Image (cartoon, rainbow, N blue to C red; front, side):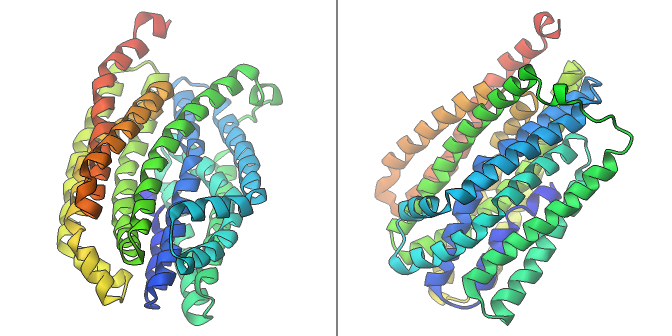
Length: 423
């Protein structure tokens, strides 16, 4: 959980440091682009999810040689996708920043940040594969140290490049690239150390058509599911941008609260992925059910703590992120909505972990697409309430996600542990 909590901090640090400069346009640019990168890289989060699930299932089934093979496959896909994103950086910047609907000043600042930080793409995606591989082996402490290293480097480099050397947004973007590169070097070093004594995966196994087909099918469905989820957050940000720079900056500051709580709860989902994947691989139905229950119970416990923390310390955290008085007042007006998000999202994140660990990717994809439709229905109904209605529609999406997966869970459990499935 703590390892996952560090993930959104690259955007949070950039927002906080740029926010100290007191320029709402510059803050809006870096905050908007941070959301774009969170969503863009999140789209390829299947590299972490599938690597974690397949690794855990291989361990549960006692397939030792498959463990390193899953890391190699993930790194190959990460390198290919990352380089493609760099090649397409100019049309991607034009399309994504243009779709956000920011002012000319915000869009210009966002383009500067985008064209530099996109060079971190292969590094970020490779880190996804390494971190998924570590957590899939229940090596979450090592994953934590990798993430801590990334963020310590990012904090130091951002402060140095932005505040000391006055490189502005370009400095914040460069710091993110440096941090991801350092994290990958550390992660690969740890993977090499853990791999001592484990037989190398033969080329025939690594590129086995059946295994590759299964990997690509699961990755495809998780990617579609993630794209539907990203559509919700991009639409949310774009609607804020269309309401002016102040609303955009307000929502962007509060989005940091939302992302931190989301990644915090997603840490429990990671635990569910590992536990459910391993128990499924071992054909342990009782263990699978126990893991699901524990993740939900702990999820509600931690969600209440996070919500209480936001309610008590939220105003102070807003002041840390920005020195703009008008922006501080606007953010406080919507803080109560942010405090509801962790509790409303428990089922969504817990069952995400269960479904991914069990590689129930097709069902997860279909339920997420239905949740997307329900989100837009809620937004249309709440349009008269402006930005408040937009926030309520976003929170309702959490409820749809979790509720639909909870309803589908019993049937998937029976199918996965039926005599036919075991056989």
